[in-house]
Image 1 (tube, rainbow, N blue to C red):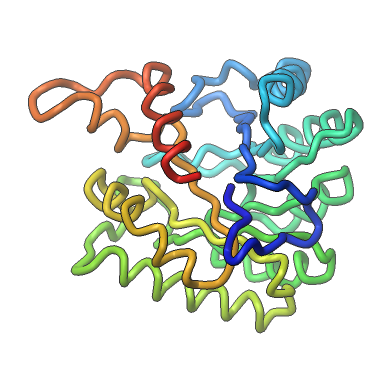
Image 2 (image 1 turned 135 degrees about the vertical axis):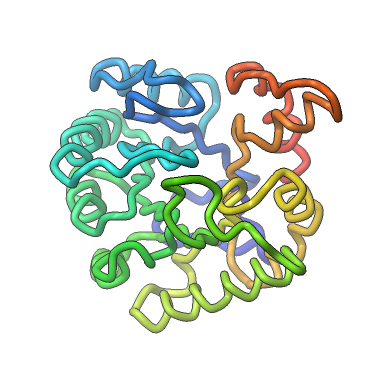
Length: 257
C-alpha cells in the first residue's frame, strides 16, 4: 500500500517511510487464493502473525469471499468469522485492516482493535458504512466497484478503463468526504479484478500515476488474482492455480511500489 502522494501520511496508521506491505487472511471456506486453509480462528490468527514475521506491515482480515460468482454470507456468520481473528491479532500488536462491506461488521471490528476499514464497495453496498467510518475516525479504503460479482463479471465494459475508473473513484471519494471522513484518512484502490478483465487490470497498473493524481495514498491489491494467471499462461495455455502466482504477485507488487 503506497502512502505516497507527495509523501502523504494516512492519519490513524503507523508512519511507514516506504510502501507498506499488506498481508491477507481470508477467514472463508471458499477463498480463490488459499482455498479455506485459514477458516479456523486459531489457524487464521497464526497465519496473520506468520505474515507479520515474514514482513507484512498490516494484516487484512475478511470473512466474505468476493471472488466472481461467490454468494454473500449473512451478517451473523461474517461477524463470527471475523471478530475473533481481529481481536486476536490486535491483542498481539498487529495493525489490522477489516475487509467488509457491512457497517455493522466494520463497527464491531474497530471496537475489537482494527485500525483500518477496507470496503471493496467504497461505501456503496451499505449506506450506513460511511457514517460509521466517519464517526470512528478510522482510515477508509475506497475501492472502485461496479456491483456484486454473483453470477460473473459484472459490468466489465469500458471505453477507456483508466479514465472511467479514475472518474468513478473520484466521485466515490467526494461522497466519502461529504459523509464526514477526513481527507487524510482516505486510501483509494483501483479494484483489480472487480468487473475487469486481465487487459483492464494491466492497463490500470501501467497508469498508477493517474490514480495517484486523485491526491490520496493508493492500495494495489494484485495478490494471486486472475490477471496474473492470464499473463503466466501466455496466449495458448491454461492459467496456473492461484498458489502458483506468487512470483508474479511479488513482481507486480515491487513494480507498484
